[in-house]
Length: 455
Image (cartoon, rainbow, N blue to C red; front, side, top):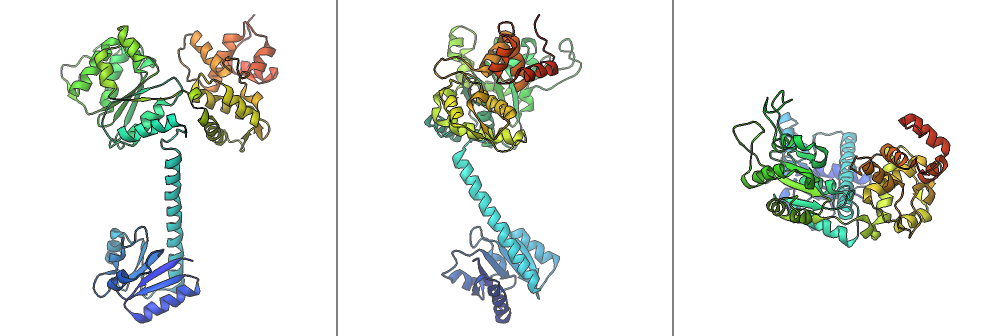
């Protein structure tokens, strides 16, 4: 039963309103003024305040904020636009003109209580989600992940430079986004650049921008990612791939807060927070002369190491459940469940591709699943204990052999890379078995993707 506080100085109106609300199963508390309302002992548990705008002493708008989170409906005999707007500006959820229609009053009360109930539920849900998943998109109750979440909480509100270290597929970009979204810069852009994806001769132009005619092909002036991130966050992924010359210029940006476009005579001041990530061993690169020591020390003001999935056994079941739900929703599939043998296989597997490999394995299984549950065979993971990678990891390895040098592949890219890497040493039957599909499905996908069988 909802409890409603009525603050109205006219006894006749107060009594009539009380009877109306009690007939509809509301609990009612009365007061003739704001001073009397504040002195009531049974205010806790109030769900709505209905207050007259004009009262002896303090106005009814003083009820706004008197009880935290409790909505206030203002009654006024002066149903002018001005009084209504002023009440709403001060925080009233709505207003109603006197004399009011009983049905109108009941509808307003019901609507306000329902909307407030939904708001409270949403706040509770967000609080639960924040506790369960402190970083959006990242799941993990293990001690290692809790340490990661704690570091994010500590460093995010600052402007400190952060170095995120971890193997491919561990979620480095998710950490970078969390650092940005929890910082004072969240209303400004976060600009991302993958240093491994830019040809060495274009890296400086991408970072710092260039002027027209500064090199062959520079047909116009263009700002770089550092300039684009001014006021916000710059995320440099795979910073270990940055050429030494670009490292020197980036160091000057961190030291002086200034950039100069390629071919420009003047510098420009920028205000950028740098977050960098790498799967490389930067101290080893420093020792070998492939990475500047002074830049390394500027980057690791705060380092956040991400654990590989093989060190997060406690998280695999939770991760699998969340990724399965997301895949079903994205692929418009009915809700599926993982069989016990599938969960056991996941626990036993080494996951060299980390969370990204787990996500792709589950997505592939969802696509192939024809029933309501996913068994071990649809995951196509190697038998426990033999240490061999599954198709997803082998496909990534095949892609690297082919010179592509990356493991963030789509399902079709995994399929192509795996087939091209193994078709010379496997029969079509063996390929199909390893991929967990029929020979017919293998043939059809070959045709669709234009992958001819070797002669």
